[in-house]
Length: 399
Image (cartoon, rainbow, N blue to C red; front, top):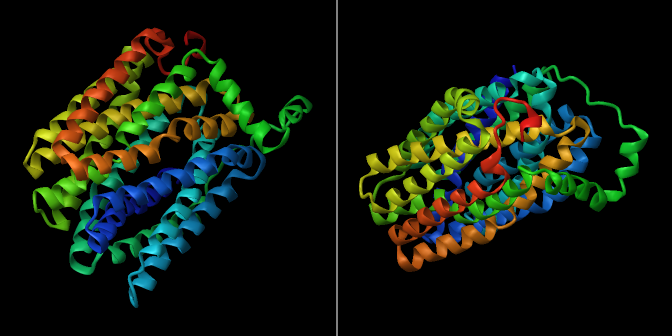
C-alpha cells in the first residue's frame, strides 16, 4: 500500500518537476526567474526543517503525512484556477514556496515511517523499492506533463499534480505503521523548546564520524546541483529550440536512471560498502554534468540525465539508509530534519548563482564548472570518515 501511495505522490512531484519551471519560463522567458522560484522553495524548506523534526517526533506521523498531502493538493489547485482568469506571477512566488513547506514536512515524516514499516535488515532494500516506484512514476510523469503543457499549458499539468496529492492523502489512511517508542524522562529532558530539539539532531550528526562529513560535503554538492534541472530545461528550450513535449520526454528519460538505481542500490552498497558507493556515485555524476554542457542533442541530454539520476539515487538511498540505521527511532525525525536543513542551506543560493551564471555565460560553460567542482568535492570524501566507512546494508558498528 505504501508503495502505491508513494507512486501517486511521485507522479504529482514529476508533474511539478516539469510544469512549474515551464510555467515560469512561458510567463517570463527568464532563466533567472526560474532560479528565483527554485531558490525561494529551497528557503521555505530550510526554514521548515528547523521545526519539522520536532513536529514529526511529537505528533502522529500518519496524520502529518495526510495533512502535508492535502495542503499541497489545495495549494497547487490555486494556480490552474486563477490562471483561467489571469496570470499573476506573485501567485507562483506565494504558492510554490508554501508547498515547499509541506513537502519538507512530508519528506521528514516519510523517512521516519520507513523503519516503522519494514524490519531493520530490510531498510536499504525497502528504500530502493520506494525509490524505484518514485522513478517509475517519474518516468512517465515528465513526458505526460510535457505533453499536457504543450497542448493545454503548464497550469493544466499543475492541476493534475493537485489531484495526485489528494489520492495520496486518502491512501495513507490505510497504511499500517508501527507506533514510535514512547518518550522517556531522559528524552523529555532533551526537549528544551524547538531550538533545543533541533540542536539535539545537529549534535547527533556532528558526533557521528560519517554523518558529519557527509553533511558538510552534501552542503557543497547541493549548492552546485540545486539548479541543474532549470539549466537542462533552459538549454533544451532556449538554446536548442525544442518544444515543451521534448523537455518532458528528456526529463522522463532521466528518471529511468533512478529506476535502475532502485534495483541496483542494495547490491552495490553490500558489495562496495557505503564509502565507495557514495563517493563513486558523485564522481560519475560530476563527470556526466560536464558532458551535458558539451552536448547539443536532446537524445544525448536525456541519456546523460538518466546517468545523473542513477548516480544521485544510489548516493541518496545509501545516505538515507545509513541515517535510518544508526539513528535511534525517537531521534530520527530531528536528525533527519537537521540533516536536510543543514545540507540544503546553500541550495537556494546555488540555484540563484547557477542560473545567473547560465544567463551570463551560457549553459555550456556553467555545466563545465559544475561538473569539475562536483568531482572535486566528492573526491574530498576519501580523506574523511566517508572514505573509511565499510558499512554494508546495516552493521552500524562498522562506521
